[in-house]
Length: 145
Image (cartoon, rainbow, N blue to C red; front, side, top):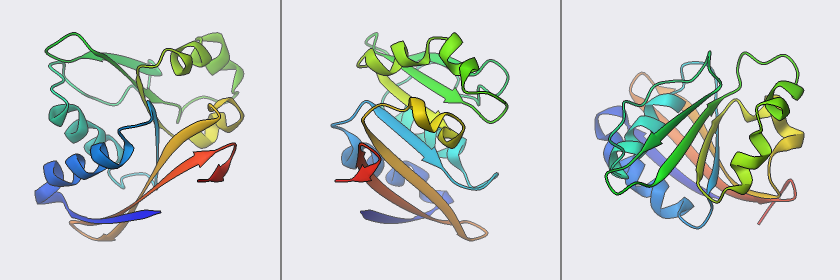
């Protein structure tokens, strides 16, 4: 497990570290309390990767699709509002995960049984008004690597 301490004023440097640590896996799950900064970190990661679209939480639509300046596609999921994992199945979430494209997932605990065999877990914890601790772990079959 890797730990990063991040000041919100230096979020772009933090995003670069997350990208470097997670670069070998297309599926990244973001966990943390409401308001911990999941969407803020995803937005910073998208900027660092050259995403040209506006990055915002897909709370109501469940998934947003973004593109970078060279045509790579990124999917951003927010499962906070689903009540049954079948909603995710019905939208084809497993096909997104198998696409090989980056999938950034907020509130993954709502679809835990649908997550792929291997993914990166990024846990964000508030440690001060402008400070966050980010723990990154590669998970395989529900355990850590």
